[in-house]
Amino acid sequence: MKRTSLILLLGLLALVIVAGVAWRGQISVPDSARDMFREVSDATITGQVKTAFALSKRISAYEIGVDTKDGMVTLTGQAPSEIDRELAGAIAKDTTGVRQVDNQIRVEPGLKPSDASLRESSRVADLEIHADLRERLAASEHLSGSEIHVSVKDRVVTLTGRVQTPHQKTGVEQLARSLPNVANVANQLNVANPNAAQAETPGVSEQERKDKELANQISFALFIERDNFANVAAIEVENRNGAVTLSGAVASRAERALAERVARGVKGVSVVSNRLSIASNRQALSL
Image 1 (cartoon, rainbow, N blue to C red):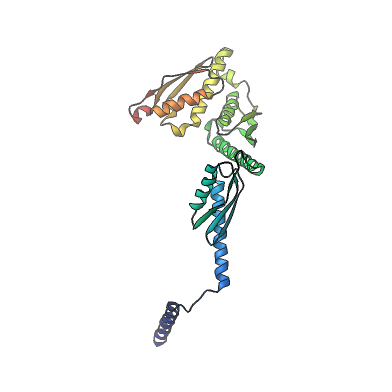
Image 2: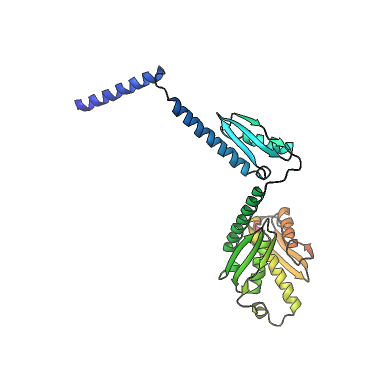
């Protein structure tokens, strides 16, 4: 017991001594350690500013140099306008840890993005398209049992593999074309059962089959946007030789306008008659 008390007493005494020395300012950090900490902090700030520039579509297209010393950031390089120059300065100034910004960026009217930034931007766009399309394909219940491979080069999507029906083939292509930044789609999908559409509706004419197929493509395109509708299944689609009629009910004017825009964006649609009504409440949409 006495030994324990003695240890506690000695510990308290040591704390008092350390606190007293620190209070008198007798504990100092070596200059070399201070310099190393400052360099690490400046490097962190430089990295943060460059990351912020990379997130800006306007600034990331140009080669802007960033150097930091004691929290002061110096920007060098060229920009096509004073607006871009000021934007770079504002982004840097808004970065955590930056005390001051010395904006030495020169304005060069007519300056074009560097080849390196264009290549990087194209590569990132291809990767984003690839990821978005794979995510939407995985979420589609209509494509179960399909083996679809996706490649993207210069914003051109190439589809290979196998689907079960012609409707699935056209649906996958429509899904790819609906993604932002997609320039074109090369649909090289094989169809396991090419006669599936005719087998499902025996006795129908070729025009009726085409009308039904286009209507299905529109329904598929609407399904892709299902998160933006209260109940996308409440929208009915009819098509006759490219003249599309939308009927049913939606929750708002915004949904009504979106449905029409989606339908007009499907290849083969010539005109859209929007007869969608706006439901008075969400319960009506679920009936």
